[in-house]
Image 1 (tube, rainbow, N blue to C red):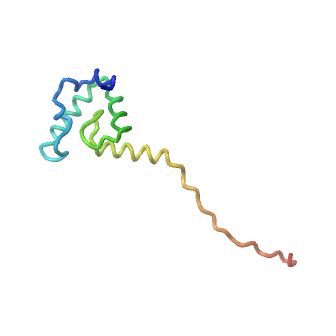
Image 2 (image 1 turned 90 degrees about the vertical axis):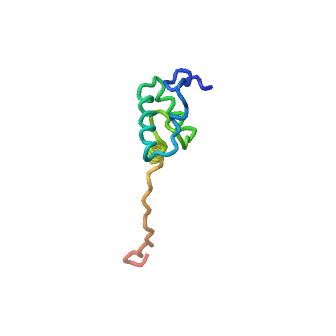
Length: 100
C-alpha cells in the first residue's frame, strides 16, 4: 500500500463509488459524490499525481475523472514539447555582377 493512501479520505469507503460504470446519466451523480470526497481529502494532490504518473484510465482519482486527466496530460505534454523551429527556405546564391 502506498504511504499516502493510509491518510486518504476514501480509505474506509466503498471503492465502487470511485469507479462508476460511465460518466453519463445516473453515473454523473456518483462521479460528483466521489469528487466531493476528494475535495476534502488531505492527500488529493498525491492521489492525482499517482493517477497521472500511472496513467489511470478509469475512476475518480484526486478529484478528477478520466477525461480531466487526459486533458491535464495533454496540457503538460504541450508545455514540455520543444517549440517548432521554423524551416528556412534554401535559396541558391546569385552570381555577383562582375561574374565572380
